Length: 69
Image (cartoon, rainbow, N blue to C red; front, top):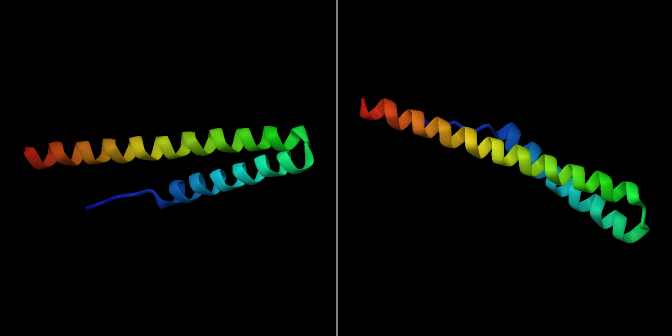
């Protein structure tokens, strides 16, 4: 049975889009706050997506062990 945490996937990719929007706002307005918000959002998104992928790989590895036994 495939188990995915769609909540984390949605939050991660949503944060990527917010981060890109903040960076574009920085380019348009030259407001340093937009750049800070954008970088924080992008870092959080990358961390969340990597965490979900690692958890999914760990889950599948444990399922493979159970199937072999």
